[in-house]
Image: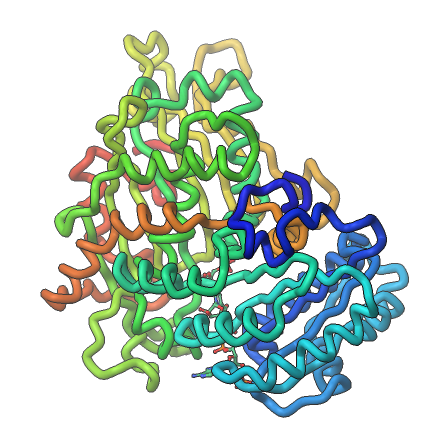
Length: 521
Ligand SMILES: NC(=O)C1=CN([C@@H]2O[C@H](COP(=O)(O)OP(=O)(O)OC[C@H]3O[C@@H](n4cnc5c(N)ncnc54)[C@H](OP(=O)(O)O)[C@@H]3O)[C@@H](O)[C@H]2O)C=CC1
Ligand SMILES: O=C1O[C@H](COP(=O)(O)O)[C@@H](O)[C@H](O)[C@H]1O
């Protein structure tokens, strides 16, 4: 698929273009990107800066326009001022930075309007046409608004501001519902107005460099793929932690909790890429078909395989850190988890019996996201008694993909300590990105926005993937809520509830992120 033109889609909606229109002539087209909810946090923090970075790198088409759309009263100049505060150039690309920002801001415009009526979008359509100036119009809408407004925006924008002869696409932000039912309802509502090919459900973890590299590592290195199964892998750990709480987002968060916020999407997407079979090709549908298969092979998560926690206030070094429940936007007595650990299983031939452990939490001691693969022990290890302070029988190889911060891939091995004796210790074969690659790593939103402009769906979630993902988590979420399971309290800035260790121990696992420096368990 090139630029989204070779897809098989219903004739009338064909990505917003009339059937048989064929690809637009080179140079004869334009792309308009409308950020709906332009006054909001995500737009300021991520979307406008990512669009600028793409512009700086000459990745946007020659003719493009950016529109901000929201209810807030603003004019073009005020939008420009708001955006300019958020723009930065990459450290290695400082030359002409100011000029580039100016050129970018000249392409940014604002249209105020409501989300649930068509007037604002009709006015937007009029302005877009003016900017498109007779070129083939392609339009991308980024829904950066709270989820209860998604369908209103799609209804109004698709009816009044769709492209007449080019493509029209919508990027939809998470959350995609709260459970199987509400997610299904959202999908059905979106599909009243859009074809699946027009919908780009974003999971920004799929745009992270290390997550992209996961498939490259697996499928282009002979040394890994043969080991990638229950025969050699003891367990897989997917770990997410943040060293700050829900500050300012408690109102949103309380309705979702950490399982929906991080596990059901970011960690599960990584798991699917990690565990899928080799796709037929790198085409979006081939990759997504494999992800769906692996997700459908997973057992629904059981309550006994979940531990939940919630952070409480803590004072350290004379500084006080508030508890989750201290947030005035959080309802009194909330049992919403800000931490969860879970053991998941894939019932297929490759992964039968291998625990996939997930751990995600806010207000922990560190900010980190990583995948840890612990291999089985070496049978009949000749060197088991030659180590320095480590039992080599249990200190097995571990492959770590550190998604952030300090992106790295390292393999923990046992190695001989130089000298005349025969002593072994643990060392890392380490690919540290900042040492190997001297360029700044693009933000995930840059890659994903570029893919959406190019019509590439590979890193976006298909509706059947979403259904399969919710099927794994919905029963346990319902049970946690029906029973009002009390979360284990943990101090702000700690390593989280001890229950997570007992859960791992049930499967004979120790969390890799808390094992001794020598890797011993
Ligand atoms: N912020 C983040 O870090 C992340 C956000 N997301 C998702 O991205 C989307 C946008 O997030 P974020 O920018 O934080 O959201 P905001 O709460 O900042 O909302 C974005 C804009 O939507 C409008 N808005 C807010 N609340 C309402 C309401 N109740 N009714 C109508 N309009 C409203 C406001 O614009 P105006 O009043 O001008 O119309 C606001 O500026 C959400 O779906 C969120 O879940 C996903 C990952 C991370
Ligand atoms: O989707 C979300 O992600 C962020 C973490 O993203 P990162 O790229 O900064 O790791 C998280 O803070 C937020 O709660 C969640 O909604």
